[in-house]
Image (cartoon, rainbow, N blue to C red; front, side, top):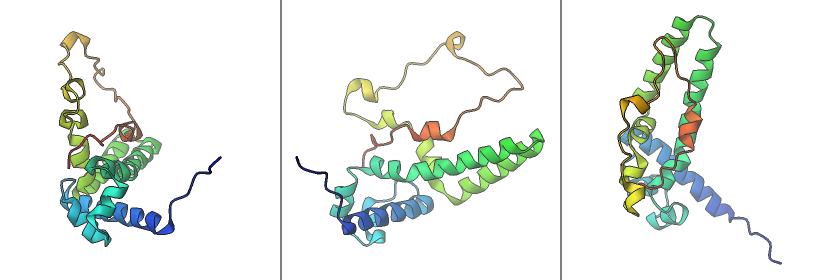
Length: 161
């Protein structure tokens, strides 16, 4: 019975260099920055990038969870604040500051990953619009809470390079 081989140390280092370079490049230039630019910034070849990440979506998948975890932390800090207005104001200020300094989440979340896929008609087809009667609505004055980590479980790997 063969054991599972662990990746070589240089491969692990190269992958981390690519993730770090992608994190910085996405933050500065957006998620459409060229993959060649990311590879160059990491000090590796484009072939090494593709050995670790099949496409741009897999690279975004590697970077996005950290960014969304930060948004979860902002929400948790707001939730711990006893005054609702102070919580809202603090969350909004921190969120806007984060969005102004990092384009990654803005651009990744603004896209519909399945709409970019052309692998199968059903996978890339937009969802049918729902009727107003079938759409769940949040009552006025209440706040529907969702976790950013829920969004991080969505796959962005259907993006095309």
